[in-house]
Image (cartoon, rainbow, N blue to C red; front, side):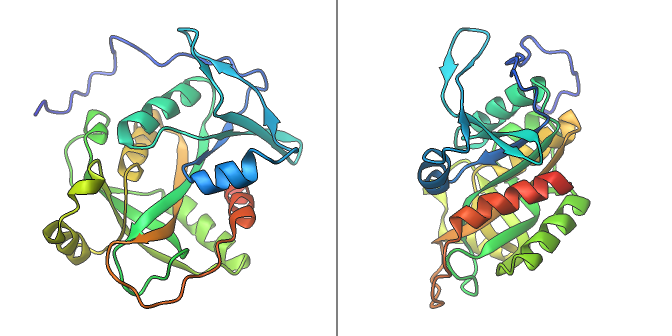
Length: 244
């Protein structure tokens, strides 16, 4: 494997999308249920096309106004490499604060479906983060942003758990041995983006945090599912974004 190269000069750089409203804050929405059922039909959310330097048009960008400020909403590509490429573009376009949310697999039988999971760190079993930070198994999260997110979820009376997340590129290679290993290391959820986005945020020196919705049962749980509070989840994400 090629080792981490600290050289910051690269052959290609992300292009400025020249967003007209010049937003500095963004919510990355990895949850298709919330994007399709809440964002797309919402008449208060502004639709606009985005064109990159090569003329490709994206229809995965929206604006929502909060406190007189336009916040960018983005439905990013799933997986570490794709979402980092998408996020590089918006950082190059002026975004310096990001809250992301999506779903994750549940690695604990004590966690009910739809429980909010607040990551405390992520295990790096994807390839993208190693191009942004030196080799290390685990990457930490912004503690100040984590504390803000926890307080906001408490105020809105959400049930949540805090713990480590295992980020992997290969959802269909989650073997019993790997699941057991990650449980032993304290992981309570598994996703495909977190560690890569944490590495990007540290490299680009932006404010970033993420929360997850516990969904697929990687291990069996007899707990009854919690209600999925979709409209409230995006409102909470915006509130966290405005406080970090």
